[in-house]
Image (cartoon, rainbow, N blue to C red; front, side, top):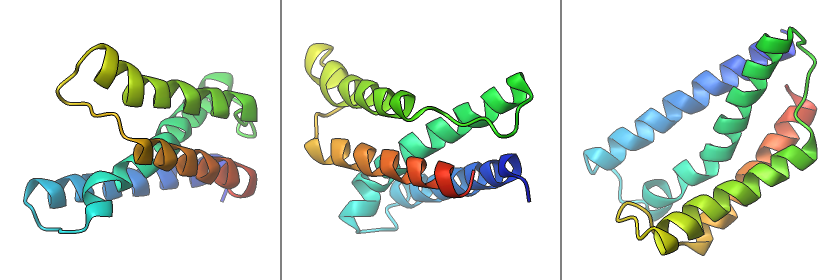
Length: 121
């Protein structure tokens, strides 16, 4: 199976997992703190970057294209700053809360994406 297909299957799998997590939270079917508050943060960066990778491969028509590691880390810094500092602190968004654990989940998700991109995608 080529790398673009693997990336598409990963994106579909993680998107389905995200929907299941949201349904579990919506219907209060889980008491797990990690599942309720942090698993989606762990999956966010890999989903976002996999979608970006698939889109760029399609546009450039280059199925071996990879995202530069510096781009991946800049994305981590921007998303962490936006969702864990700017929106909750500067914009006083009621939907957002500043949480250091979420930054750790973004970090772990970034490492997961880098690993998957080198090994699988």
